[in-house]
Image 1 (cartoon, rainbow, N blue to C red):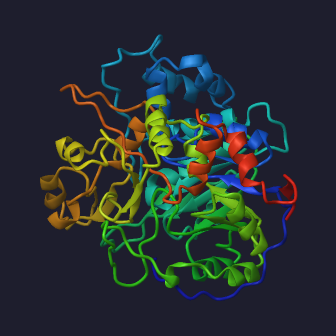
Image 2: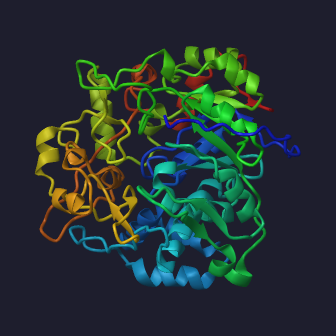
Length: 499
């Protein structure tokens, strides 16, 4: 974890009306694995359904090119306040009846510190549609959130604006120190330009990533409400730092332990690997729950909290509840393709599903959980057979070039290009293309002109105890509501916590 800077203690900000605090937060996973269908089912059941806010511009563009089966995204776009913006995106990407199955998807604008207007509009609309569909017809008491990654910061302002236009209730963010998100939410709620500081390697100038609601929507901009913000943290020291100053204070925390799926913070101190090559975590990497409770903000536990016993343990320690990802990612309501889910459930039935915490897979340098599945990029031969190509580019790192301008590089791009941009060749070893793998997981993988088809790369949490129990009870797979019922078996009653 990055060093936590000291900060002056300020007076508390005025209290604001609290939203409902459900016991279970369904984690925001992958690219549209936590899609609108899953989030909708969880929210309908009285808990916090969360959509992934990662790469929603690509999800929208590719779904439209597939003909928008069922017409769901077009129905959502019909509710967007600016029809001209919608028409521009439909004209660019919608294909009546869908493109040929083996035809490549049309590229979309790449993220930069100043993403082209067409890219901003696509990002706003993609996130709007996902949240709108998750909330459609559920009523005022259902709560829906969006999960964004600090590591994909060039997409953050437009993603959050789109979600707020759809009435999102919660924003969740981790994979870094999200100290500027509360101010971003306040600015956007006022209809003002929102900005976050850009993390530019070697940068000598202060640069920002902005979105201007007035510029994008003009007179079509409606009144916006600020969603609650939950910061995802790994240790209590970071939670304490974020709590000190009302300017950066979130409305609550998700305390994520190392076994959680996706990216995880590296171990504190010198990196040590176990016999499988996974990072070894210790007591310094665990949050002190007594100190978390003493902060006074609501918090949820995540990472190996996927059984009824673990849920009850979290509540007894002072948590509102838990955030759970893996049980929902494997559920029949998630966005995984039927083939990917079937392979994962087969491994569960055989008692043979394993998840590695690969310290090299992610180009971000953060450890990344990878489910070990035949025929996916988790296997070395499959990984090595993929031509290195960075075309989606969500994890590109901005850096300052010798001429003072900003360049972009990704440790998973072709090695010679990365080195030419000043990167170290050793940083490219073992790096996998998460962007394309995660798109393939949901059936939106790229078919290249040379015939190459992107392979899957599935991420799950490492604690599979709950999943093994559910597959015994529901041998053909389970729905999200069945996972919710299971998780709450040791609580006094199925409830919504009012905090």
